[in-house]
Amino acid sequence: MYPLIEIKTIPIEIEMKTTNAKLEYTRGIAEMEVSRDNGGLSIKSRPIRVNIDTFEARNSLSPTLARSIQQQAERGVQSAYEATATYAQQGQLLLKTKIGQELVSQFGADAQTKDVMTNVGIDFLPKGGANISWDLGEMNIRYEMDKLNFDWKFGTGDYQFTPGDIQISVTQRPDVVIKYVGGLIYVPPSADPNHESIDVKA
Image 1 (cartoon, helix red, strand yellow):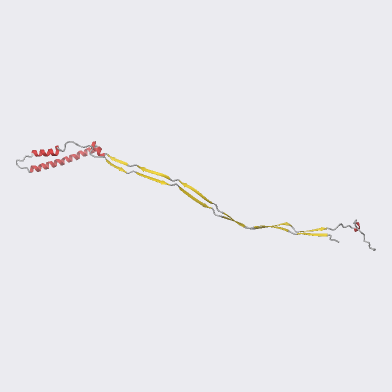
Image 2: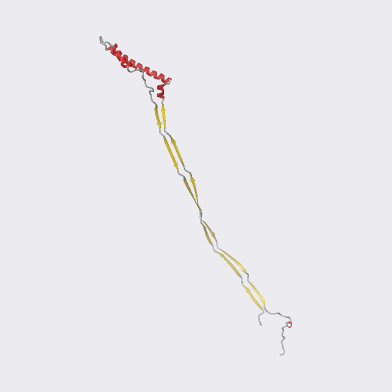
C-alpha cells in the first residue's frame, strides 16, 4: 500500500530592500572678481611771467597831454620857488648893503654860478627807467598709480539629507500543491486490465 496523494506547501517569499540614510555636504565655491582703476599723470606748468611797465619812460620821451601839462605846472612851481629864493637872497643883500659897496657884479656872479653854469640845456632821456617785475614760474606734477580692486564672494555650504528607506515586496505567494500520485481507479475494479480476482473460497 502506498500513498495516493502528495501534498506540497510553497512558503511565502518576501524580498526586502533597505536604503541607508545619508547626509551630503556640498562645499561652497569661492569667486574672485578683479577690477582695475586706471591712474594717470597730470602736469600743470605755468612759466615765469615778466611784467615790464614803461609808462614813465615813454612819458619822459613823449608824454601824453595830461602828463605834459602836469610837468609844465611842476616846472613852473619849481621856477617860482627858485625865483622867490633868489629875490629873497638879493633882498637880504640889499638890506645889508654898505655905502660904497658894489652889488651888481655880485648879482651877476651869482646868476652865472646858479643859472648859467648849471642850466646848460642838457637833459638825459628817458628820465625814468622801465619798471620790471615778475611772477615766479610754477610746475605741479600729480601721478596716481593704477588701483586693483579685489572682490571675494564665498558661497555657503549646502547640506542635503536623504532619509533611509525600506522596500518590502512579495516575490512568491504561499501556496499548497496537492498532487494525486496513485494509479487509475476503475469502476468496477474488474475493468482494470491488471485486476486480479480474489479467491474467496480458498
